[in-house]
Amino acid sequence: MRCRRFTAILATVHTMRVHAMRLHALRHETARRRFILNTASLLPASLLPAAITPAPARAADEKSAVFSGGAACYLQPFFDEIRYKGVTRTEVGRVDDAANTRALRVFYNPDKCSYKALLGVYWRHVDPTRATQFPLDASEEGDAFRTVIWVADAEERKLAEQSRKVMESAEVYGKNRKFLTEILDEKPFTPTPEDGQDLYTADAKAYEKAIKKSGRAKFFEKTYEPVTTTACEERTCGYVYFPCSAENGCMGIVSGRW
Image (tube, rainbow, N blue to C red; front, top):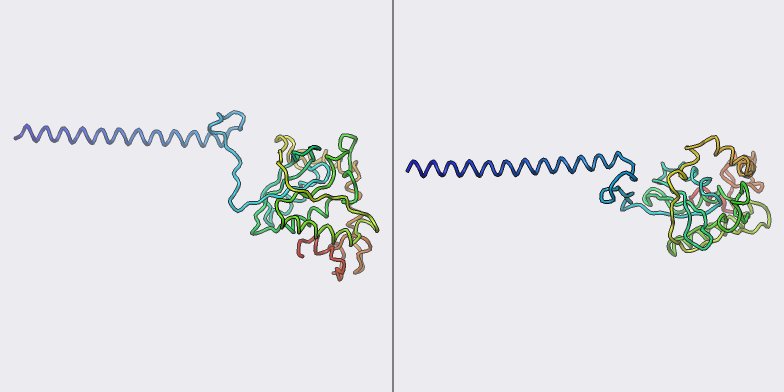
């Protein structure tokens, strides 16, 4: 009888040891995986194995819009400025079309930021009457540096066309000047390497020098110069000291409230 009880006790102890060993092994493996994941988040992607290289996650409520207006690095800071409105991030790159058109991809939360607001930022920081946007040299001329709004669906096309029509008829870029900005269906987008992103912060002095040399800074300072009357005087509304009647509708477009 005692022998049977002793045998049963030994079996129970053995079972408990097996469970303990398995639990220890499981905890060890969990800790190992956490260490790998934590390490992966600290290392450059180029140093990580492909299996654990983190990919940029796109939030479920995030959308993107693509705009072209010359060298895209000059558009980037103005969209980054409205992060408080719902823009989450921006990427300089190019559209995979025949011209390899330079472009900026803007990610935003549609619950906080409207597509109209993005259009407003775009129109205020390009000259849609120019075929090429303020080239520094011959390398920044041609179709790759034209102005294009790349639309993802019929609703975006409708809004883009409406905004272009209002801005063109308002003649805020000069009387009888035709807009050359195209509105085209969205195409695949390729971001530039990391060293081509956020140039306005990575090398602020070179960036400021470039926008001055190209004439971009002078043009927009003149175009958006505040006026002391309620009339646009051929300048974009929104910078007048007193609210104007906005009869031509341009103020609504550039503010995104239309």
